[in-house]
Image 1 (spheres, rainbow, N blue to C red):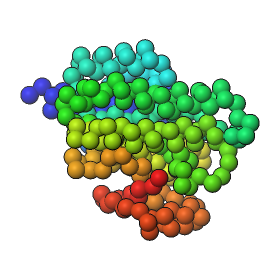
Image 2 (cartoon, rainbow, N blue to C red):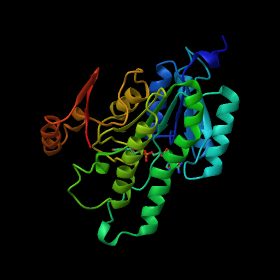
Image 3 (tube, protein in one colour):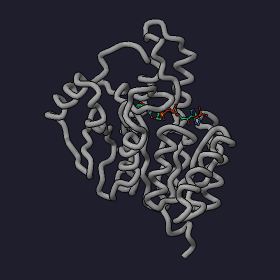
Image 4 (cartoon, rainbow, N blue to C red):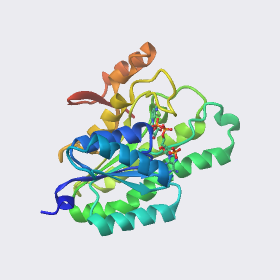
Length: 270
Ligand SMILES: NC(=O)c1ccc[n+]([C@@H]2O[C@H](COP(=O)([O-])OP(=O)(O)OC[C@H]3O[C@@H](n4cnc5c(N)ncnc54)[C@H](OP(=O)(O)O)[C@@H]3O)[C@@H](O)[C@H]2O)c1
């Protein structure tokens, strides 16, 4: 059988660095064909080359880079066309790319152009990509869509100000997860949001958990079994041992929520 037909194929957006890059690495290590999306061609190619060198013993072309700017419909359309022509399917879509952790803003006087920029990338990017790939996933009766979210997008746990563009884009992303999941029941497609926790990337800054740990939750949701959950917003609780207060808040919540155990423990939040 052709190699491309055997392997599951995953597309990860915003993967030239940070959590996206590490997610590509972990998916490639699981033996998947990984399509590494990056808006900058050179950075994307360098990232894919690095992962292929690491992966060399198994498959020299496990990771392929694609120019993909999630805020640009033409860029999305090009990738969808190429993937469809080349593979005829996409098994996993990881909507990871995001911008604008706007700690300098408050909702009361936020620059709405900035909010609009955040929505274009963080919400409409995943939405456009989902719309584009769902028909292909439906044909194959298999799909996993992971929207990389943030506890900042949780209605229940947001009782602080600031980061309005980012948090509101992630709250909307979580609702997109719910809507898609509800519409895709019994299609073989599972859609979930995952908060990777505070992770030491360019966006997260110093002090966060190692990127390897943050990516685990994303990989978990991308590789769920057929009877796995859909429509959930999952947080890996032990990501937070840097913050006693947050642990306390989450554990209090967990008493009233569903816990799902799959090697690591994830908790369902709203
Ligand atoms: N780090 C944390 O503590 C944390 C916590 C909660 C949630 N998250 C979420 O985790 C995800 C990954 O974050 P990260 O920490 O890895 O951030 P990061 O290091 O800043 O990486 C973000 C990635 O997204 C890409 N990107 C931005 N806009 C794009 C666009 N329009 N099209 C395509 N790619 C684009 C960036 O590309 P360039 O290099 O070209 O800019 C980069 O590859 C995000 O969804 C973020 O909200 C992170």
